Image (cartoon, rainbow, N blue to C red; front, side, top):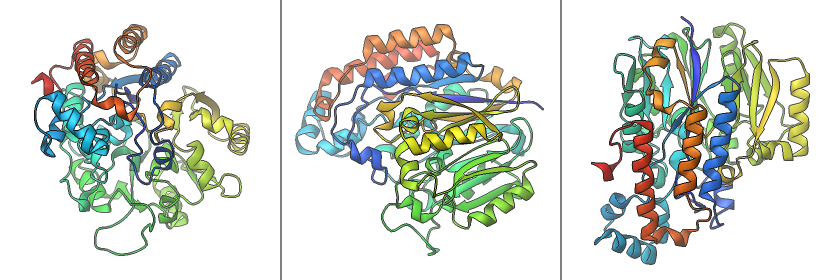
Length: 441
C-alpha cells in the first residue's frame, strides 16, 4: 500500500517569549529575557509551511495552546479574578508566570510519537501524546495536545490517539523528537526509539544536563502502538552529547525512509547500532558527519541535524536547514560538499526561523511527521491542510491578533490573555476544530 508523509507544523503562540525555561537547551538559556517578536515568529513558520506545500509536500498545521495557563496558576495557589491571578504571579513568582505562558507547544515534534498503520497490528495510525514531564512548562501541554490531535485525527477507524504516559520520571517521554522510522511510508518499517536513561539501571548517564527520555517510556509507546518486536529497536543517546546541549535526539540525528543522517558521536555503541540497522533496513544508508568536520558544539549552535529530510518525486532527498547553518562557514562547506557528493541528499533549502531558533527550536522541532495512506489522508480534518487560501487566512489572523514585541513583563497584561482567547476562538472556527480549549468549555 502506498503512502505519503504529511508534516504537521505547530503554529507559534501569541505569548512566544524568551524566558530561558529549558535547562539543557543552550539556545533557550542564552537568549533569556531578550525581547521576542511573536508576530514574526508565527510568520516565519507559516512561510516555511507554505514554501514546502508549494514544492509538492503535504503540509498541515497544529494550533497553539491557550496561554497564560490560568488553571495552572490557580493550582499553584494564585487566586482571585483572572487579572488578580496574573498580577500576583508577576509580582511574587515571575518565573512561574513565564512557565505558564510558554509557547513551547509550537515545537510539535514533542507533541506525540507516531506509528503508521503499516507498522501497527490493528492497521491504524497510532499517536501517543508526550507527557514532557522533565520540564514544568511543557508537562502542562498534554491535555490540550490530546484534544487538538483528536480534533485533527478524528476518525477512530483510521486513528488512535493515546493519552500521555503517567506523569512520573520513570516514563519521561519527549515524543517524536526521540523517535526514528525507516522504510517506505506505506510499507512495514523499522522503528528506532532513542532514550537517554533507564530508570534504576545505572549505566552511563549525562552528568551536566538531564536525560529526558527513558527507555521505559519508549517501550510503553511501542506496546501501545502494537509494534512488531522484530521491527522495533531501542538505542541510547550518547550521554556526552546530551551534556553538550543535545537535549533531544533530533538535535544530533534525523532519518527518512532508508537514510540516517547523524553525527559521529550521536549514539552510545553507534557502530553496533548502524550494523543492526543495515541488517534490518533494505538499502540502509548512514550519512555520518565526522567530528573533525563538524563538532558537536557547531551542530548544536547551527541545528544542522534539527533539519527536515524530505523525499522528492525522483527519489532524491531535500534537506531543510535553518539560516544559522548557512551562516556558519564550516557547516555550510560540509553541506555543499554533501550535496555534490552524489549521495541521497541532493538539495538544500534554507529558512529563516530565528525567532524559534533563539528559543532552541529549528525546522524539525516545528513539525510532527505522520505517514498516511490515501484513505487516511482523506480522514484527516481537511481544514488544517495548508493551501493558498489557508495561508492567506492564517497570515491575516496573525496580523490581527499577534504583537510584534513581547517581554516577560508583558505577560501580566490582562489584554494579552483576552487577545489570546479571541484569537483561538477565531482559529478553532477557521479550522473547524470544535471546542478544544478550556475557556471554550
